[in-house]
Image (cartoon, rainbow, N blue to C red; front, side, top):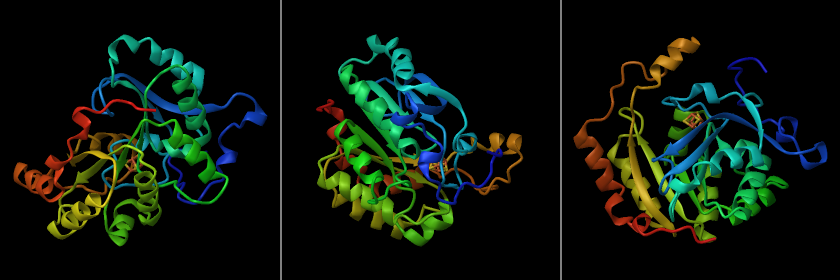
Length: 277
Ligand code: SF4
């Protein structure tokens, strides 16, 4: 696949992911982080899986976009690597799969989390929800995945679907559908929202998002992530035009305002959360 080819056209995942019929399932891993402190509860070993179809204007990992490239690893290879850090995990830590968008590689993710749970490792999925569909066989795999996922970090990029499309290239209907599934099946969640001036930092949308989150069950934490410009250098190095050129990070006042409108202080479950599955 060509570097930075636009992969927005839906791809048959079976084209790019090994299946049991073809031998051990392998995932395409962009990189790993041994001691992640911001990728879910506790200290976590985070595998950043390669591939994402969205094109968020603020994405600071454009090098994770392409599907079907990266280091090929089996679930056991990832878990053997992760378990070297098990002593640091305590009651709440474990492994997180982030990206890119982990759900792009759902076969590998299901294999990885199933094997992790068999080893007694806590599992956390960091997702934007973009690949979610109720079409089979994908949905059946997602249901199995949720049964072996202790908690999901769900990024809601924009509550308004038209604005979501402008910001990421895709609407949010299937993403909100995924969140409804998680809510109605008692899947623990952290909700995260990136605050971007001129894109998401509007009181009406933040209020709407705050009201929406209130309708959900099992939300352990709500986080406002202030937009930052650390990714700009990568765009320049990769020769891609940076879509948010000239937009500065939000001010402390606007961050506080967003936290108020999203009622972040009301979601305290994360303070005593323990993996329960
Ligand atoms: S979903 Fe994540 S990896 Fe994909 S474009 Fe958006 S920020 Fe980047």
